[in-house]
Amino acid sequence: MINGLYKLGVKLFVSNPAAANIREFIPVFHSWIQGQRIRDHLLIDVHDYSHVQNGPGILLVAHEGNFSMDQAEGRLGLVYYRKQPVADGFTTVFATAQAAARLLEEEPTLHAIKFRTDEFLVFSNDRLLAPNTPEVQKQIKDFLQSAFDSATVTVAPHAIDPRERLAFVVKPT
Image 1 (cartoon, rainbow, N blue to C red):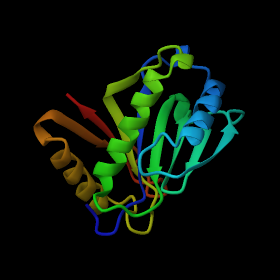
Image 2: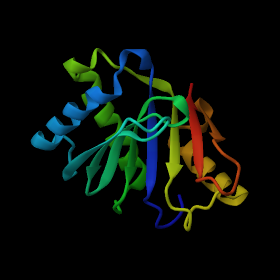
Image 3: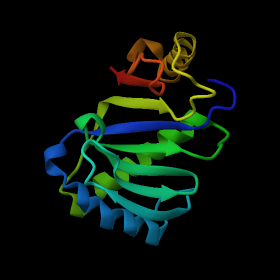
């Protein structure tokens, strides 16, 4: 992984988006704040962007990173992106996203929402350390393949336009 890169994110896609009403996540995220439900995170506030088409949806702000039920590109999913440095970078980001997804799947008010396990998005919010160039794409792709065992995962750039942030679609098999 690129030395010093910690502004990483993961989007776990909802497998049954028709079952989800985006505004139902507001009280759930408020309850997470009240109970400080995410380990090693100071949960602070909830913002409603549900009015923005294909936008960030419902955002849960934490000191360490943000969570959102994101609707970008018309695909509902849980996004977690890290804002503060952490020793094991991607491992922590991915584990935190999975833990939050489990909490949502266990939430009785959300009508049995489920997350896909056959595809997710990994992205960097640091265009200085990780510009969307072929060289950096190869470096991140190699890292992701080693992190998930290259024999059992397909990693493909999400956007090759250098003006877009560096992102990869990961498909475990």
